[in-house]
Image 1 (spheres, rainbow, N blue to C red):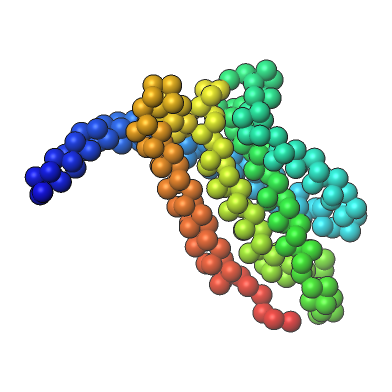
Image 2 (tube, rainbow, N blue to C red):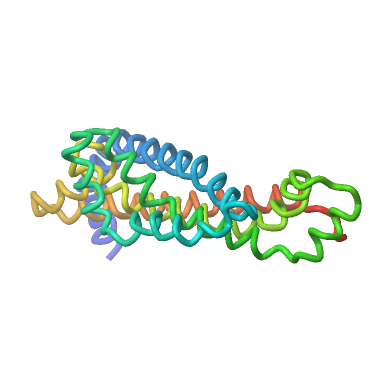
Length: 225
């Protein structure tokens, strides 16, 4: 029995060892770069856009902008990537652009929801203490809305991890190359290795962002007014 188990794990190591040691590391690095760059750009665009759309002057346009941003989620990931193929060609750049558009909606929507969810009485109390509108935004509204904003960022990041596997179809690299190679060559171990690594990556990113959120909330949460 013991010999049979030892032989099983030995055969498993011989079969899957080269995949993990030779194929996955470079593809994983490409995948991480894709996800971090696309998510970072989506945050830089989405959070300020959400903030602007909660200001009185532009609040009436928030739903129209959300409808436009929602196109990124309404169109399937593969179709969205294909749309940019004739415009930007193949490679890294069109993949990043498509992933940014695909990941914008959760960030913009949650930023608006978080800021709109702050009690008006709290904001009025802050203004009554002599705070200007910008001070109320950054010292009161944003910290209180931060957990909801972070929920949108985490959702966007996890979605991007999965969608980034499609980048391989237009030469964007990443773990999708291993997955689609497994499909083409009828090698299920390639598919399992690529998809499993992407799943673990998504979990790690979500847990890391949750930890970051706890640290920031603990350090920056304003005093009750």
